Image (cartoon, rainbow, N blue to C red):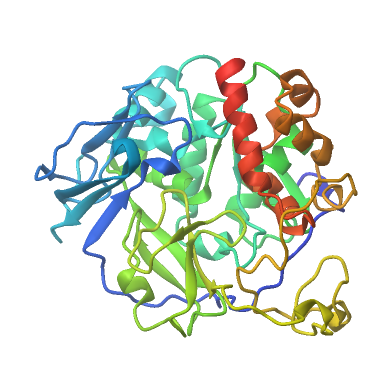
Length: 447
């Protein structure tokens, strides 16, 4: 194992509702959906039509700017609906499963005998290329042109995050096979937790393994990139998740796309936090059935910092391995700020709860404040273990000063990297949205 990179800055939010490493059986979902909003920079163009019969792996829609990037059905069945929003923007492409699970066979491949272009073409034609995200900008990856490197983070430090050591058990060979594919595309770097117990991560072959220790966001791939090989102007770096690497490994060894996913169902409002085996894009109805403690809750696909609010009959989003249920913060608390707050979490020692050590907290969605002037206080630097000055970067974004944004490191960060900054911000600013506006401006003006 290489030298451990110890991150001193960060913050662990100790939420109640963490799952034990056990699986619970749930009934298969009847409907599945791919949501184009999960893919930044995507302009979807439908290929299939409502009523069409599809197999798992058949194309549903493509990227209008890059029609070779295919988005495929995770199950076999019928294209049931294309739900649209304002200006006919596609919100959901819904497939009703037939229960037969017919999957397209793309043929086995020995990755050692393939060229880089052949590997990329196979990833494109099977829809597996959509598992990659591209930095800077965190957009759908452009398959053409030089790729400096690929990064994989094998652990997640977000609140109540899934344990990938547990999830990967039994799929170690497929994970290594997936890394072999990635290494054909570009030099690959794997970030592991310093105390990881899974040798598939720590002893991965054909890649560069780096060990990290520290609080959240140590598990964010952007933080790992910043400490291993920072992104410079003009460079293109791809990122991909653990379960997606496994799926790619299975694709090349079996010829079939495997859309199976493991998700952790967690949060203080979940009666029995647990892991479930499901499928990419699965409807949450059966996953959450009879397992929510009250009606006044918020269901989140993903974690509480960066996840997407969904309905209880919504869908597991494309890149998520977590469903979190917490109380909705719509109840006014009289003089809440004046109470001792032994059951409230605060990073600033506002409440006496900081004296309680490792206590877990039942937090709701209430902001406990309102928007205020954005001042330089240093509080954001304390939770961002990267070599940038976040407060000055956000000010440059709000001023739309592109040169200053580049100087201050906008190429280095995406929303998940600065989510903790938003959590601790006393100005109550939506920093993730501000950053996205800056990234979109950079993509438009600089490219």
